[in-house]
Length: 217
Ligand SMILES: Cn1cnc(CNC(=O)c2cc(-c3ccc(F)cc3)cc(O)c2O)c1
Ligand SMILES: [Mg+2]
Image (cartoon, rainbow, N blue to C red; front, top):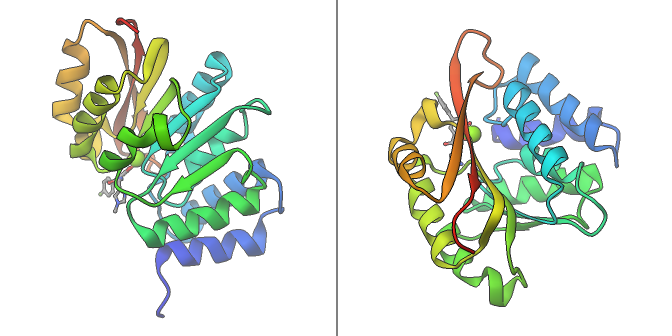
């Protein structure tokens, strides 16, 4: 059919979601994934935990690694205060293009910046090029073997402060063993594991890990 799954999802959203309404975009995307085609959104139980973290933390500067189609970017940004913002990084240009459309459809383009680069490059530029001083929330949802590389880069750049939260998806499926070992073994974090269902699959279990930074600034 010449279209990709991501393009079909975007078409469905444009046809069925209420423009400018983030909740409608998310509900419609969940409907698409439940009735038409599965997609790797941090949805349902994972999204509920993400919602709770954002509500409690009230972050002003958020970083997401692994935008995909923008589902979790919209989920995070819909709860951000007026001056708060989310920088979301996607290495795949086709995904980034779809994500920008989804963000626009949700009316959140003033809160979300989608950057189409490799996360390893952009983390070093956040301070100088993206005017970031500290990150209040980091959401890891990109290639699972890169979680450990990128959290170390974030620490090296001194981008975390006491209370910053690092939230990681898929620590069971596909799994991020190196990352889990590192973050749980580090004295700079208090980590909590949540056993959750895999997105849109009631008979599969995954896990997410919430780590609060308590180390030196
Ligand atoms: C292509 N690509 C662009 N970004 C990424 C990073 N995300 C993932 O890899 C990812 C993968 C899965 C998953 C898919 C199939 C399967 F059978 C089991 C697990 C679930 C997720 O929630 C993910 O975040 C991959
Ligand atoms: Mg994921």
